[in-house]
Image (cartoon, rainbow, N blue to C red):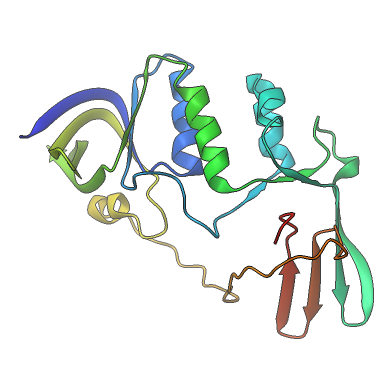
Length: 221
């Protein structure tokens, strides 16, 4: 059975950008509907760094204290080995922010937290397992999206449609927007290795000609 809904803003993609935007709109009273194609946020090897600037926004929103109660690691200084020399690459302790550190937290924990905060507002709506398949266009204007869900097709009409559906965005493709490809200076391979209690606590990097190895301390790996 086809479902048809109306909202003021429809966001395709429930990643950090889509969920944070939905929270900001909902708290201002804007009716917003987020469509996320997966059943949950449990996807590994995503951006796990919560930067001081993001933490500052959470402070301004009044949710920082609650956020920092969740399990995380705090990095105040980044060091690295360049050739044979040990150098300080980043020092967050001098920043003019409330949190003078970079927080490490699995992205799914971050997204679950933002979702919990957004659900406090009646204008926030989230539909999981809803994959956007096409745009609704009327008179050369985007008027919403078509999506597939386990319950069947879903049609959402919206005054504003936002594509936050990743680097291979279907919304961007269907809208005919051009991509500016800046190129990738390197390929990244993620892996987990076990961690001994005697291993260094500090997040550390080894930099050599054409090669970089970064170690992120996640307590048990």
